[in-house]
Image (cartoon, rainbow, N blue to C red; front, side, top):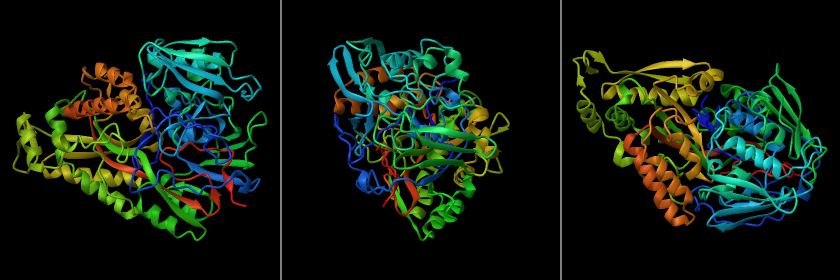
Length: 575
């Protein structure tokens, strides 16, 4: 069983999964103290990092129901387990979970006093992180959250027990031990290998892209409970809300305030998360059946959302990037020259323009596997290898042993070069990208065949099993892109490495980058990794996607944000 982080279904914000997204519980509300302990990403310049309407806790009215849409019901309610690691599940569970840190507006991290009174890097050689948990923090049944929960969670996710079907062992694998100090609420994490992205496992989440930072020890220490104990029921809440009803038939989940919550009282009396198909989202919002929805890059969604008279469009920088994954483990795509020929034939700039211009977003192509445009460290490492050049594409195919037949198609040993492209049904953006890629590759003589599969089977039966030749979806990252991106590309059998190939040098390169605590040096190392990946071209990055949402007027402290964690106690409607 592969263990993978989260990816995002083709066509921004559909079937979303996230690269090592960690959970957000308490947020960055104006009424709560937040101690900033780091500097985050550089200014995006063109789009704000947070675009939602901010309001003080006191100015948010008590009560009200927030109705949101998700792509699917969770296949497993444990977001640390591979089948549960879809963005829809994370979105549903986000109000029910939290951890010692949150992400700030600029992509840094801050202490979350609901869960901890102190978090600090206490030593660098060896690396030691000291955590003092808030003794008031409890699970839904009133059991205190202690170091034992974190110890068991780390052990379950560190990759030493192959029976655990984990999302990924990034950061966890570098931990030597968890040690209790003077009480069960104070402990230290000692690393055997340095890792600068350590806050990511303590709740450093991105709005809408989350993973539970800690499980109850009884769950984490039991492999059966971890893998299958929560296929049909949610994990105990450790946040301001709890799951109070799951309507599997109607595909609706209802959340209500958690009676055991120790922090400030949530403003909302109810959150309703219901499954709505991608092609029905915009109309549901226009009909006032939803209070907010993710537009993605679909022009029809954008135009429909703009027509709602009591709503507005919010747009921030994003962490999501669409791409084409190439299965390099078999067939024609096993040849790096063919993979690069495909990359050279795809007009990425035109694809990006066709998706971003209609929604009023700055046009750019994604030219890095690790950083997003606007993030500190971003460099264009793509153009030199897969920049649009049909002549170079045909030259690469020739070097790979292909010749053009009379009908213009590429052939080798009497066999035409035909690649099957697997995409999810009822996703307009997936269809749009497929058609553009198909037309681009036809120019250089590569035939692309459509293999449209049911949306609810796209990941489980095709992507997760690498059951495709070429496919498209999107990765959704975090504010910790270096460590979190590793399992997409290394090792060859990593849960997220659906290409089935790697460069063995990457293991040592990532270990060195993760261990580098100097930010400038780490960026240099990360870009060397990026160039190494482009050299064997397992993935063709396409478009960086901003967060574009339609939001009902009066909804505050929720909406479009690139990095900032949501404080669910302050989400609500303006008085």
